[in-house]
Length: 520
Length: 114
Image: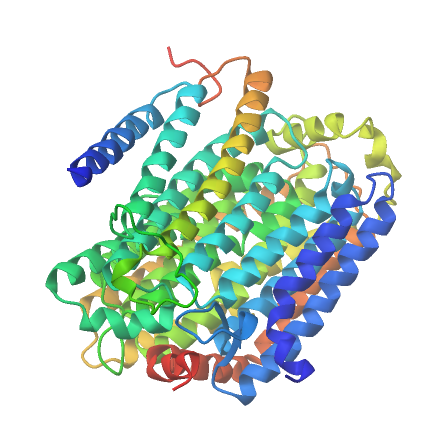
């Protein structure tokens, strides 16, 4: 095998090795740990770029672990969609790690290992071609996310984490039940093999398979945050520390990706549409948008606003996937990438903005508590050099995030929503569900802009004590990076949408995927 | 007969697990999750079909007739699931104790509902 054949393995191996090394290093050698961790994250970006190019060159690259043939061995599969999502994850990883250099890495033990293991789990979930491995990688990323949710400690964080852990443990049990039912009915766990086998299954087994797939779907939807199984999300995400929350922005997308991948593989016919419970998925997605938009409007602090924006983004994706023409899936994937970047930037930004906010505000109380628990380094706030005009920079970044999330021109959020609307209206006649989604998308954009404008005015213009937040350049850099990427994706939207359209076409015609995996 | 016993065991464990999961005390929730995971582990095991007196490992040199052996895959899966479940339960117990320390109550919401 050539070196490049092992490239597919690297997004899992790199964070695993970096996480293991930083785990055994002593907590006092924090600079070394940070260097290793950020170095590994940068390497992951390089690898991810190489993988994106690899996926562009070939239809789907299959990596057989231990070189066992596909239905028996475990496979990793890279196609365009997985490649782009891995690149997105690695960029978020770098941003969160750089942000944490200023203070968050000191707020609790083993921060760097947890981030690396989280990246490993997310990358693995995007790459795997096997349902049970999907469960294993979900567990890896969840276990790391439990640690990150608790990072910084404090009463509010621990209370929110308790709910988060219990809900996700229960969802993982559902995932196990679904996977084992599918195995019992078809005798295989390989996704490509399943796509063939389930059609041949006789009625009793067929029913069992469909029940299994439905239970699996519910488990994915809990992770993706679909209403009515999303009530755990705002609490956990808004209480989490800033770098952790910015990484969590991609976790719901893992659930969405799993729904998309398995839904289309288990679809029917050549031009496949997701078959199991599709109308429900569309209505569920729309209910999620509505619930998220109401939550955004009702939010009193910015962290909750960002958390409910995650729900709006998830709902949009789920509904678009369920209505699901090929063009719509491509547009939805573009929206996924840009909305995740914007959400991640917003979560980082929120903490900086609230830091200078009213003393006694909910989030400030939480962070203050965290620093109290952070090994007596509570005075670290003062070390930061106050950038003159810090407030102006923060305000500008916040406006950028708000424009992205609301989908106003000229930034990429607008292009994403516009592409979705365009694909929705291309069907002839336009079904009622598409009209409903269209209306909800526009309404949720309006709700977002109202809520973010209100929050922005309150924070930046009507500050009662007018104290500028003390912010270090290293904390602004990752936010600037993420927003610059959003701008770059606005300019280069055509290229990315074409790439993702190709990816969506491949997802909708799973025959090629199946052939490549099974080596036929 | 074995089928009935296994089915009842899974059913009773799952039912008790769900009931405990919905209780307001964190310890009850932890025990409920453990019981649910026992039920799920048994369920995975049963999905390989129940066989008595059949080995899961093919013997060297003997013609491999799949009908003579138990399905080894669910047994491997259940091991993975047990290990992961064990680790996450341990973590849950830590979170539970920390929440008890911070809030001063073992109610899942961190305050007594009056």
